[in-house]
Length: 113
Ligand code: HEC
Image 1 (cartoon, helix red, strand yellow):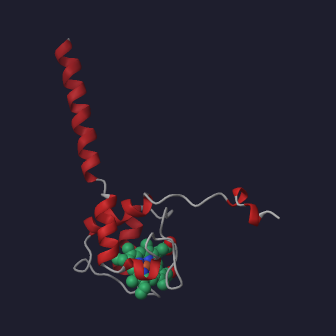
Image 2 (tube, rainbow, N blue to C red):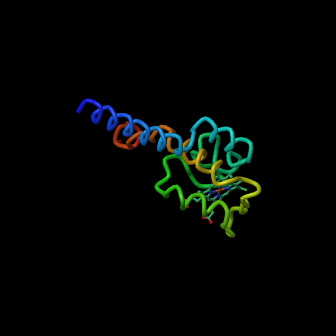
Image 3 (tube, rainbow, N blue to C red):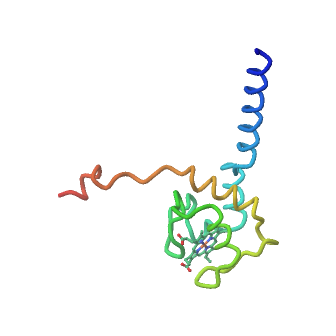
């Protein structure tokens, strides 16, 4: 009986470990965001700038962000999979989602005179 409980705990730990390994790394994502020049248009924290919209805490699903970066043909130049891989973009996604959320406007006195 104890053996079964142990097996269940072990396999749960293994499954948990595997999914954690699949998720992107915010630290590596920050490096990619800097090295590939995303920051130049989107801001150092992905906060948005004059040349590109805010990306921090994006509502886009991860797959949509990856597809957009490879395929866009609008105002943003596309980055092929040779320039930035899917795995690197997973890390970028993790970095962007790790940015602090903006303050609630109601908590900013200047905005409620
Ligand atoms: C030359 C400036 C520039 C660079 C460099 C750049 N972007 Fe963009 N990006 C833009 C602009 C402009 C848009 C808005 C384009 C549009 O809506 O078609 C955009 C849009 C996006 C969007 C869609 C945002 C949304 O909410 O719809 C994503 C995701 C994105 N960029 C990610 C990246 C990543 C990741 C990199 C680095 C690999 C990068 N961008 C580099 C200018 C840039």
